[in-house]
Length: 198
Image 1: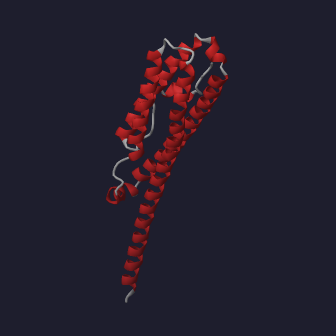
Image 2 (image 1 turned 60 degrees about the horizontal axis):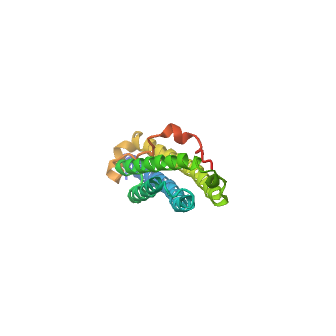
Image 3 (image 1 turned 180 degrees about the vertical axis):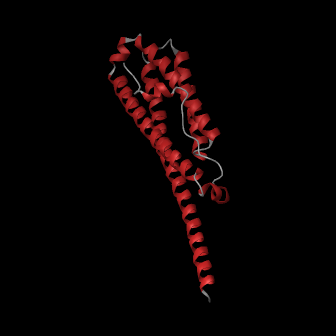
């Protein structure tokens, strides 16, 4: 073998190793944002599990506000459906949009419930309501942190994937689509901790 053949083989080996490195980095970054979404999923499921407790506690005090309670229950069910769709395809733009819309509707319904509950001092003073409210507030904070971690992971994935030369190779490796951030319609309101007072 002459020196030029050896140089060509070394260059080819370097290119193969680089391509393998790009593939592995894409897979690692995708796995990170999928894991970050799994953390959001855990917190959203916790939130969805707390909402029936909130509704049941409120039912005992606000019997003639059935429409509001039903709206919260319906919004919760829609949000659970949105979460299932997003869980099947974390980072997919349509799935993230569906989840964000459902979460917006749920937040709106919970806001209406909070307004209604303000008129019932016995409900605000209830130990059960205070406990459920505290857990719900804590869960909302966890959701915000998990969402931030997910969006950071998505940004890292997209930034790496869109850089050169990974952008040339990403499509060949099944990473043609950018991952979508999880953004809520009321992102300014979400940036603040939720105010749940009973």
